[in-house]
Amino acid sequence: MAITLYDATVPTFLQVLGSLRAVLDKGQAHAQASGVDPESLLEARLVEDMFPLTRQVQIAVHHSAGALDDVSKGAFSLPQPKPYDYAGLQQLLAESETAVRGWTPEAVNALESREVTLDRRGGSTFAGAAFLLSFSLPNFFFHGVTAYDILRTSGVPLGKMDYLGALRTSLR
Image (cartoon, rainbow, N blue to C red; front, side, top):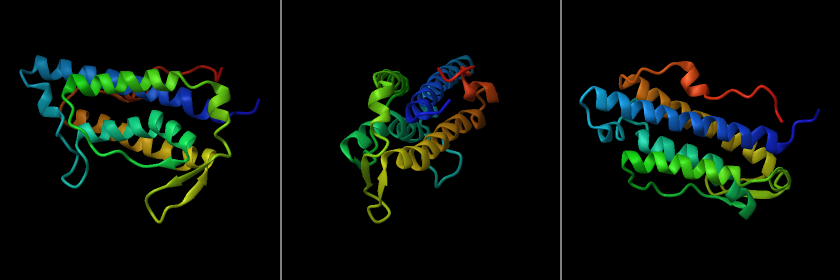
């Protein structure tokens, strides 16, 4: 069985977006149980020169639902950061899951050869599949796990399975 671009992207985006939503839910519950305002977690960082939790989630979202949209338009441009409260960040993840679910296998697989220009690093042009697999997926994982790590180092009781989320036992 051949693995399609859809198989490699959409189910993976949904798995990690869902796990991030659950991780944020655990973060909120832990903060409330500890007498801490969950909003205080939004600006938490691993180190000073890294983005805070809010931006990590926003970038993960953009490298999933946003990346599919950008490839379909032929240009990737990371949006400017927006302020979110905790509930807004959770809503952003839910909306992204809905957007990703809206992509059909035919629509995603049609992006395979579509040219997409990256507005950074000299304006590189990629084939859609190469862009999604070599740029967006690695960024998606990086920012997703960094959001998880921020909450974990903030004392939220999380384990590896929280990040992995609902595992798939088959591709289809």
